[in-house]
Length: 146
Image 1: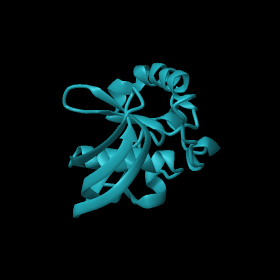
Image 2 (image 1 turned 90 degrees about the vertical axis):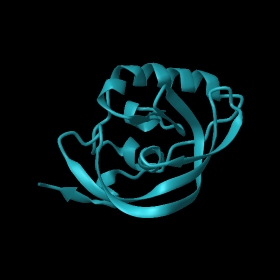
Image 3 (image 1 turned 120 degrees about the vertical axis):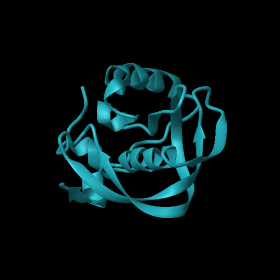
Image 4 (image 1 turned 180 degrees about the vertical axis):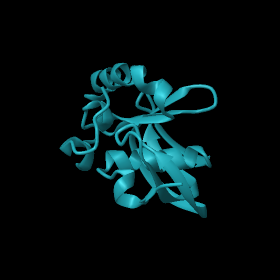
C-alpha cells in the first residue's frame, strides 16, 4: 500500500542504513514496492511505510536500487517540470529541477557507487531523494492545472 499525503512518515527524514543492517530492510522494501512499480518510475521507502534511506528507479532496462543516496552536485539546465506522485494521487505539481545530477549511493550489494545521471533520470532521482529527506512535491512546487 502506498502511503498518502498527510501521513507523518512522509515528512520526516529517513534513517541511513549500515552494512550490518541493510539487507533485510532493503529486501522488505523491495517486496513492498513491487506491486506499485507499474504505477510510477520511482518509489521511496517511506512511500511504503519504511523510514529507511532507499529508493528504486526505473531505468531503460531495470529497476535500480539506491541505498543511502546523497546528491553531490546538481547542474545543467534548471527546468520547470510537471510531476505526479504516488503519495498525492490525482494532482500534478510544477517543480524546478536540474537536468544533471551526481549522486553517491550504495548498490544492492552495499558497494559504494558514484554516478552521473541526466534527464529524465536526474529528475526522478531528485524527486525520490526529496521523499527520503521528508519533502513532497507539494512543498517544493506549485499545483499544476491545465
